Image 1 (spheres, protein in one colour):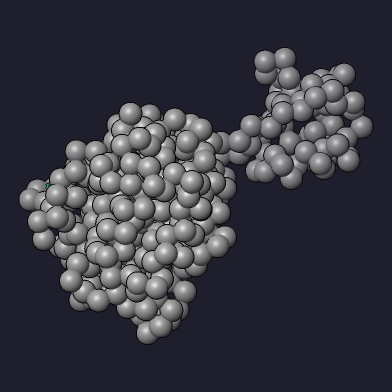
Image 2 (spheres, protein in one colour):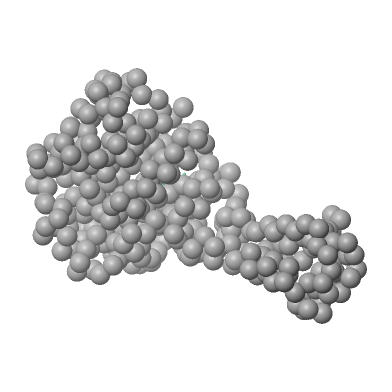
Length: 355
Ligand SMILES: Nc1ncnc2c1ncn2[C@@H]1O[C@H](COP(=O)(O)OP(=O)(O)OP(=O)(O)O)[C@@H](O)[C@H]1O
Ligand SMILES: [Mg+2]
């Protein structure tokens, strides 16, 4: 199992500003925008890893970056976290320009990768203490903050156990706790649950959603799991370094096609005629059911029951999934993209450590 790991972009050597004080002015200056990207490109030789992207993430949003392998997701995150410089274009995080205000950006972000950087021979508490020192979190704030984040991820009782005795899911939770210890405004999660079992993934999402209720935090994540993408307020689909779609999950699904409604009736011929008369819908029998498409099945079904005179025995609505959306915009299935970018991430973490 791949164990989780936080690669923190620690502003080593820089004083940690009081999170409630002057340090917040950057975000205030930029209104409600947490991440702003404009005309961003990143070229590696011949490769246009990021090819002119523009988007904004609003404060408090959970924003998902989806795309096939090599689409430019991690490269974009690297630039936003000041781990790589753009070839052209601009970006700001929490109101700070990623090029001009690198230290301020770093103070305001947390970063969780799929590849662990926990010290497994230390306890949970010791790992967090080390991180607090690195970020120069004010001494008085450390203990209560540590308790808060450890309770949030359900590890308070295990805080004094060696991390080597934690399960993979517990390690990932500790990393998320660590990423949050210094109260970042923007939390970057690059494939945060890759390799974890579905139960652990869903419990991590409970923590993330719970966190959003408690903290003023913006979440920017990449994932290859469609069920995770469903947790996002908005999703950008990136392919070959360009954003090909950006919207809410619902709107993206709606853009792909209509919902399919199937009804079983006592008299199919009468039902088809009535659908045409009452709603102007053309239906046909498929797989033994009267089948038709509507923009929003959820909204249509109540009307159907209210206005239909033919007896309906059962009804089913199937919607385009985010898989359909991904396929429609990238020509690939999300399965093709599931293999993780672990090696590239490791390179990135090492690059950070050398700085
Ligand atoms: N340091 C580098 N040097 C050269 N090329 C790079 C470098 N980092 C990324 N690339 C290239 O840039 C492109 C985008 O890579 P990136 O890691 O951003 O993709 P990704 O969307 O995160 O993919 P994955 O889903 O596999 O994680 C790829 O073609 C990749 O090979
Ligand atoms: Mg990647």
